[in-house]
Amino acid sequence: MRTAALAFALSLTLTHGAGAQPASLSNEEKASVIARMQEEIEPNYVFPEETAAINAALEKRLQAGDYAEIDDFRAFADQMTQDLVAIAQNKHFALVYNPGLIADWQRPQEPSTDASDAPDDSIDWNEWYATKDNQGFEKVEVLDGNVGYIKFDFFQPLRWARPTINAAMAFVANTDALIIDLTENGGGYSPTDAYLASHFFEPGTDLWSTSYNRPSDGSRTVELFDAINGARYLGKPVYVLVGANSFSMAEKLAYGLKHFGKAHLVGQVTSGAAHAIDIAILNDRFFLQIPVTYNIHPVTGTDWERKGVIPNTVSDVGDELRTAHRMALDKLQADAASARIKAYYAKIKAGMDLDQAASE
Image (cartoon, rainbow, N blue to C red; front, side):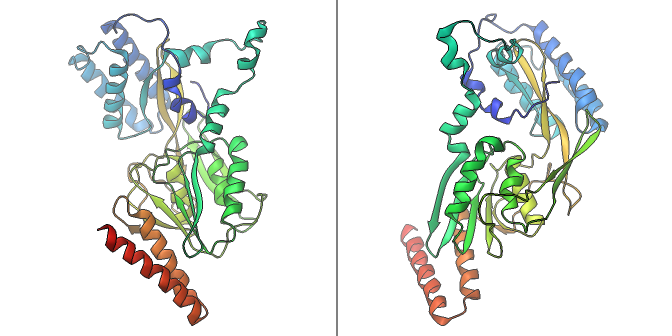
């Protein structure tokens, strides 16, 4: 198997060319790909007691002719992904068609002798795309009532994302409450989640998460960071917005902060995808994304796979931010030490109510 943090690589699959290929996908290749999938699932899938049933279900569908009429490569990959997810009830499963990306992985990394290639050879394209995406951070601002708001949609590798996280947290350092929006966050890389989470823990707190990896039959711990850049965000209300599109690493951050008592979750139940992946290259055109690792939270002893992360406060889709903002203002008003400060928050909330009434 190809062991690597590949979430970002998968997000770039459409940027790689397909290369030369047959006009249509043969039944022989479909059967070969399914056989290779079964070979990889049996020793590597995170739940060994489920592998026989998964492979039997795939074989049954193949023999029943479910894929006989599919001759398009991407359509076959899409259908197999749907079937894998439905059979295993595991949203990290995927069959991916991408000859260009597989060729990149298999190409020997030799220095270029062509001077005209030098500029491109010196570029890490994953990092280039991550930078153009502002390391996944879409918005950082201060809302009415001095409530910070951070919206970000992907956990890029920490070596790239750390300065942006530092800048975002510095920008909201003087706010009185904070809202972190993960409603469109599709996951990403660890330990970026642990570094961000460390801002909400006292120094010296160690364990963030533990995981078990089936192929290696080993456990791994991820610790919080003692050293962060700037002040920690302690003793102030933190709200995390979640929803059906919050996936994988986004769920891990929300789940961890919730069960450590560091944040109040607002929104809808998340997608329920907890398992980390490895990649198995099946042939020159297809690779399998296979779940191999499950999480063990220090407080709950389990994770959110198939269940999703349950918000503390349920809100309508699209109303998560307003709900959390109002909750933050309610909390700040209730904790205010003087009537004048209480009136300040009451005025802001009255304005919010008028704005909402006008929009209805």
